[in-house]
Image (cartoon, rainbow over all chains, first blue to last red; front, side, top):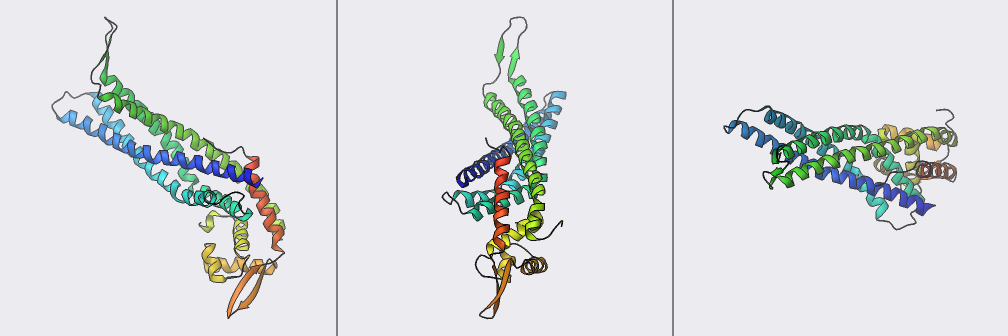
Amino acid sequence: MTDTIHSRVLRELDSFYIITLLNVVFGALAIAFGIQYMVSSVLGMTGGEPFSLFRILTAAVSMAGFGLGLSWLLSSVKIMNGLSDIRTIVKDRKAPLLDEILTGAIVRMIAHYREHRKTIQTMILVCTLGGFCFLALGIMSSIEFFSFSLTTGTITLNSALLIPSALLTLAIAMVSLASSWYFSKFSKDWDLRQGEISLSEQALANALGRGSQ
Amino acid sequence: MKSERRTQYEIYWEILVFCKTSRSFTSIIHRCNLNSKTGQDYIGFLLSRRYLSEADEEGTTVYRSTDNASEYLALFNQLYRALFDSVPGFSL
């Protein structure tokens, strides 16, 4: 039983750590791309190119993307703090772990969740908004380098150099939306556990002789 | 770990596990991240329930978990491990 719980705790910690790490990386990329799109939109406007609503819209979405990226990165780093310490406790010791070490790690995970619950809720929102923001940017930049002729039915690629940037933007959007889903699932599981802890408090109070306190 | 993020039962459990070998008041509050006032309250309660015993070692008061604490420690272990049985769990 100890090994099973040990492996479950470890699997859960590893999964959450990977998602948070992925969010740190993609949060940083989101900031970089937000700045890049913003600068290119603004430079286009001042460089004598015609004033277009499309450029203003791209600049606005980029600015929102930059802000969300920053918030995304800071929130991810907050969650990562402490998570790696708990992971080290469980990972660096060979199974079977002493009962108290494993239970101690579970207590720390719960305390970590309680401490960062609000941040995780923010992440769910930021990741969803960021995902849609970067999805819009990816689509906008794709429109820029593809042109479609209705008369001949041909698709023309204006600049192949823009493809990696559009694909990366779409990848950021996908990771962001997937992270939002995973964070929601993680949060739901831990809220259930919190509920179970509340239910078991009476049994612990009785064992301590604290009655209904 | 900040104390306000732990329940009182989790703090009792931490103190009792840490005091499986004799510990001074300072080391307990340091390890369990408590301030002096709350540390006194928690240790005072555990002493009153005889889950901790108090002794004098070379002029320093030390605390140690007693056999009475084993029931609470076992129940706590069982309940917290059950969290990973009853909830499906999160993985990629």
